Length: 90
Figure 1 (cartoon, helix red, strand yellow):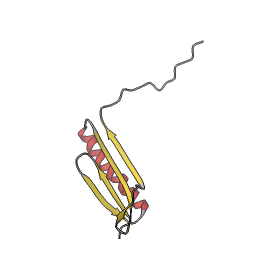
Figure 2 (tube, rainbow, N blue to C red):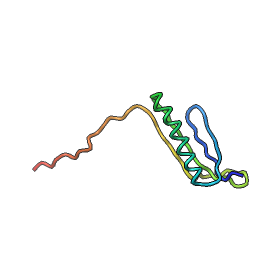
Figure 3 (cartoon, one colour):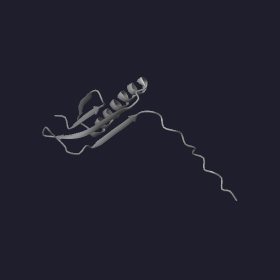
Figure 4 (cartoon, one colour):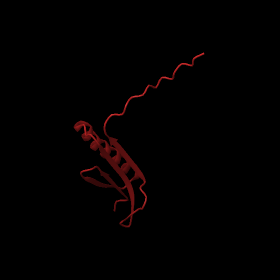
């Protein structure tokens, strides 16, 4: 019986898979989020959001709080700001 449930959702569809180890679940989550994010980046979506989480499963019941959460947002590019500090005037 799987101990962790991984779910990744975007605006269109959700994907779910299971894992028996927390480290494996974390890797599956990051891989699935990157895969969906890459698709949005290629399509140059004007506004998109990918959300993924890992929840523990105890006797078939999902935990209330997720163990890991991953989010990625896509949208219009933000205005660039200068990182250089202004020189002090004396």
